[in-house]
Length: 84
Image 1 (spheres, rainbow, N blue to C red):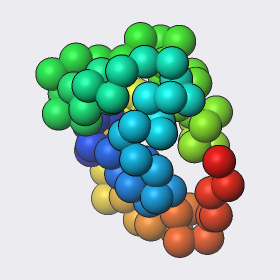
Image 2: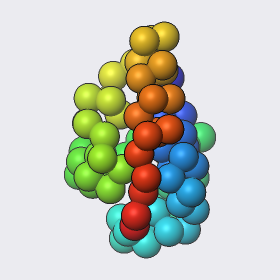
Image 3: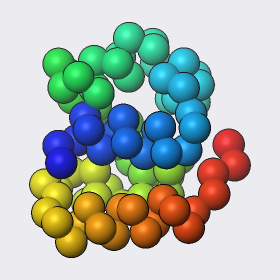
Image 4: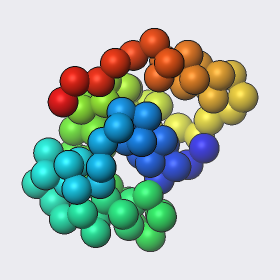
């Protein structure tokens, strides 16, 4: 899974809109959309902020996934509740 897919996945799993995420990061909604479509990449500062907002590591966001990672994602997001 690539970074844009991961951002979309964790955002949707948390029930958060692109608009809400953009407000938390002080960026435009179009920037979030461009990340998710992988037209642009988030800055390192934004990657750190995303990891803090969603409670995931920067490694999770930056490294390519494999089957065991995808399985772990399902476990993490089925057990975790988001309160933002």
